[in-house]
Amino acid sequence: MTTLPLFRGLLLAAAFPAFCAAADGVPVKDQVALMSEAKARHETGIARKTREIDARPALAGEIIITTIKGEGVETRSKPAENGDWVVRNRCPETGNEEILVKAAKFPQRYGEPLSQPDEKGYRTFKPLGGDMTYFIVSDKIGAFNFTAPWGETMIAKPGDAIVQVPSDEKDTYRIAASSFKCTYEITTPAK
Image 1 (tube, rainbow, N blue to C red):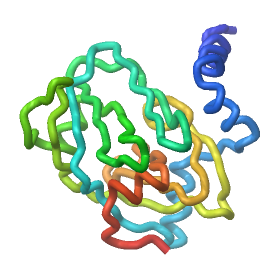
Image 2 (image 1 turned 180 degrees about the vertical axis):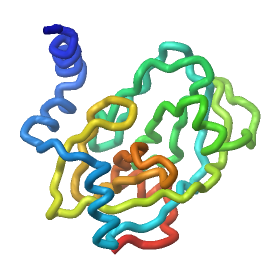
Image 3 (image 1 turned 180 degrees about the horizontal axis):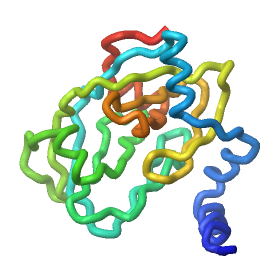
């Protein structure tokens, strides 16, 4: 028996009490299975991220804590590796939240920079607009937590979007309702 998960949980609870309190009593569900069920019921749509973002190279070992304005901590990345990028959404209503994007995925999702680096190293990028399958978490499904593809717990609530990369069903995660509305364009509405 190892104490590492317990220690990690205690550290998380001490550092992010609102996040841990939000997970208490929220059922665990499999987001990939929920996506499959939504597809079977024809309740999915297609959306793509279209709003320009700012990005900078991540520092090796850097951990990005994604915080949504009005909601608190959404997730926490694994330590960054060489070549990873910190992506900052241009969405004041969500607090311009940041996420960590792996080196292998960044060029496919964002391409080449549109600007020179600013004083903090951020450059402007335009998402390449890859189609994402999505469904909106309904009141019937209710709030749930799940393990995101990067290994951290995420909580989804009614109104949030669950998105999936069509070429990799395991790459399925939550986008907060406010972030989805701000940064994604719906090309085929979900039912």
